[in-house]
Length: 600
Image 1: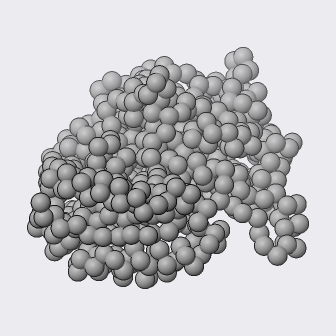
Image 2: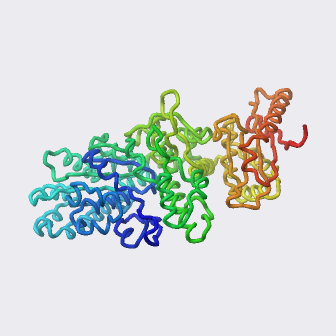
Image 3: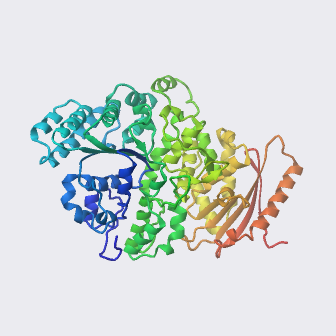
């Protein structure tokens, strides 16, 4: 779009294309993808993480393909690619769009809510198209008992009046996932596997889509994971899953070129903010070939809104809305720990609940500790298959917690894409430990000690406090066997600090200090202290004075070498650099010291 034609409004949180255009919001033009979507197939399925623009995409398509809006085409699509390159299918359908996030997720109310919501939407559709759908036909459709039967009747009757339907389903898995998360596996299974309303609805879509000469001409389904569709259809075979197709990798989210134009439209220089945006919001790749990296559109607009309103970046670089969404998804990655309804009743009579931190939690922790994982992303799998490692890793890919980062040994390499996701994943670790009663230190005490590290150079109280808490809370010790586990544990709590940019060796592709706490001058320009930390670990069975001294000497030599590394010096600024050695024997911190870096 023309970046200088008029003062634009920032489209943060706007998913209604008509509202976006009528109220003068800036539009990042993705309409060049419409012909590609047409060519991809008649029945499409797209998975992307939350808050990536799926709803706005459907709204754009609804306005483009619906005969009702064809008279407004020139104004709605002014200055877009498609305005100069319309396809023959422009305005050729009657579009019906269901956003299933509006359905209540209580098992007792979900069917009633689903039927009520879809009836309201269908009634509005029939009124909007009253000039094309006779009143008698509309009444016959609404007289059917369920939405599945209403849709079936609608598709049949549309053929009689020479009309065809383009059906959109947004957030198709929203209430089903909420039931899986908040109620349990049995309630979810009843919803998706029994002969219930939801399965009946998708069975109707499947049958109608495959019918010769069907009045259902096109179908476009979006969601955050393929699990529910696999469960309600016994494997996705309604149409084409385009989620991993390379030509659609930049369909949602923003490229660097789009970011530059977007920022320019609001008088901002993207290059001045690119390093922060890349570190916190960028590096999503939706195909193993790693085409141009994608910036999360919600996060980018959140940042830009603060910049335009205050001439400053946001105080909190992680959008609160993203925190809420990922907070809900955290429970999904623990689905293997949920008890069935019967198990929960039996367990209520026990003195202690069963342990929750195993299975997928352990896999998640390993990915956080290493920052990467090698796996083949699956296009379809049921909820019951989440205990399989490849399915679980596929799930966290679809949720946006890892993204394609190349290949290793002929298989896709997936990495945590940016600091926002990394921070959220460390939060999952902390929450997992705390919810299971494994480790529950005082967040206030930790925050105070991290503040003193940042501004006073007082580092011992933080590490001593964690050591004391580990000593007092025996359950956590089973999770602290090995240097990587110790490092991941420390990272989970160090990342509570807003003052530091915390880097680990895995983030720096090896050949680097275990932990580097660099000052976050972008938010705290008065920071005065930074930390290099080298961890050493001995199992209790191999611990001895000689081995301790050998490891300590190695750590000292490494720290002196790393202190001169450009990756340390460049972000250091005016801060004093502290070089710390931490030696663990099993879970116990047995030695800590600060080196004098000026000594030979």
